[in-house]
Image (cartoon, rainbow, N blue to C red; front, side, top):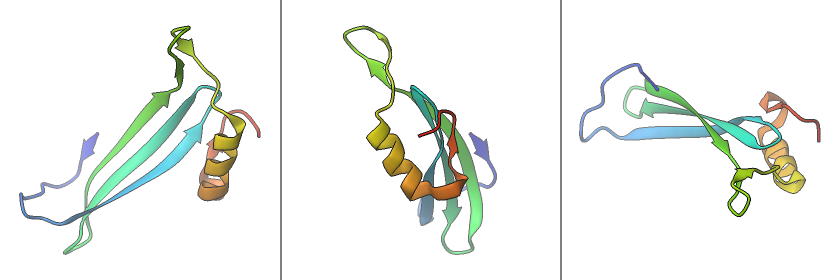
Length: 84
């Protein structure tokens, strides 16, 4: 997480989340938060999620229908590590 500016308790923030990358078993999301009053960037973050088969306790492939739905929504900005 990168903090760009401080927020106060009563600041109204607008938070944006997008899927940046989808791999075979993981997806990476980007986050950013802006103060509404003056559109100042407050912070950015990135998080990688891994789909896990709980019974096997191993990474599991992300289903193609989910990958396709995210790709349709995110468009050309989405990095696909494994082609659809």
